Amino acid sequence: MWFDRKKHDPAEWTGFLEQGVKVEGKLEASGTFRIDSALKGTITSDDTLVLGEHASVEGNIHGNYVIIAGRFDGVIHARGRVEIQPNAIVTGEIHSPCLVIEPGAVFDGKCHMLAPTEASKTVTIPIRSAAGQNSR
Image (cartoon, rainbow, N blue to C red; front, side, top):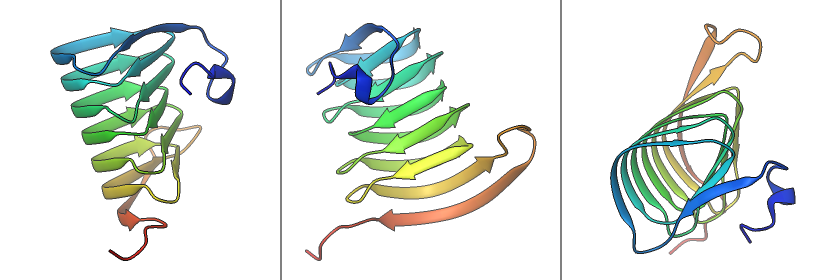
């Protein structure tokens, strides 16, 4: 699935962290980068950052387009879009002009919607979502 970059972004894949890898610290990525591992720290991405189904990330993300299919706990600052895919679990804060929560995703935290033209104007929306989940 993650090789189907037409679905997400036409940019070139520049790297990935596979399952079984544990990273702690700061990661800077350009182009489209995928994480399917455990990471604790700060991630900076100029392009597209994909947290895959097996990702377990704790910390801060500063990026453009962030796609989450795994677990994330922390703060996201996105200049573009944040997409939380089905079965993803996100806890914390999201600062972005565009947030998409797919059915089946879980988001527990605050969303600060940035104005597309002026990042200083924000609207804060507290959200607790278990979109599309069936009763257990």
